[in-house]
Image (tube, rainbow, N blue to C red):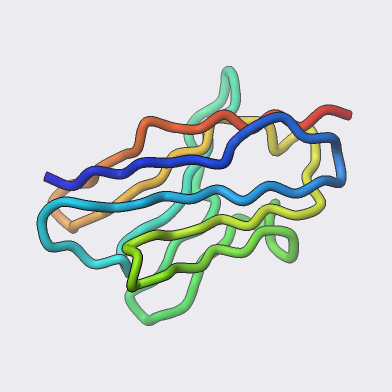
Length: 115
């Protein structure tokens, strides 16, 4: 089992910033297989950012240049720094660990951006 605990969501005005954290614990895993997804009301869950097997990071087009996904290996924690937030970024953000045969999800953290 892998446990993913997210934190850092909240309410922010458009143009503001938030940093989400996801702390992972449990059985052996690779922090390189982690990512962030989000789900807005009435919409499907979508990828925000994830590490690739080649060592780079994929970002959704809608967040490129505004969000940064990075990790602290010593703390088994990944972060999503979100700058220049827009109302359309409002969603529940989920941390994900993909171990190939399946995946684990965090409980989600709400991000609300007011205009």
